[in-house]
Image (cartoon, rainbow, N blue to C red; front, top):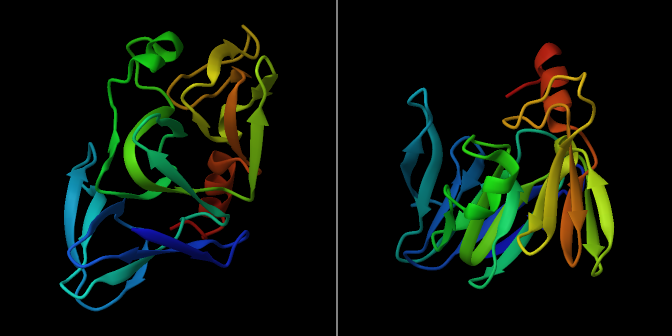
Length: 214
């Protein structure tokens, strides 16, 4: 799969160029358009039984699929090489090649979330991974020993070799490992951080309250 982006950074769209018979996983509600003949099948269901991901498969002559985030912002592509994975804010990936997988039991999250389902998911494999930003994207490369603190609401992703620690903003504030509320993330290099410049939860609430939610 090849990825071509347009309308960035404010209203990013990713065009997924598929070889004959190639399949791609994508957010079920993110498709804008596709070339004729693209087959669509639900990949898995949410806890309410509604499809969340779909598999788009190109016909014999190949084709394309256009996907876009629900919120205004950039789109960014990570090329996974089969060696190391990425930790991604839950719900922020738009599309991935069929050879990219979500690792639900990745051991690196045990120190952060224990047995709970946290606000991050781990993806690995070989191929392209398309992420949806809220706002624009900042890429923060960390040198060895360099320290950075990030609010979880603004974190998009980080490379798995980056050291990460989760801590409370204050013992007096409510905290949730499912959403990141009341928490901060401390990172230590080497590694790379991807940070979005807007708070996705706040933006979704604002758009919903003003009739602009999807």
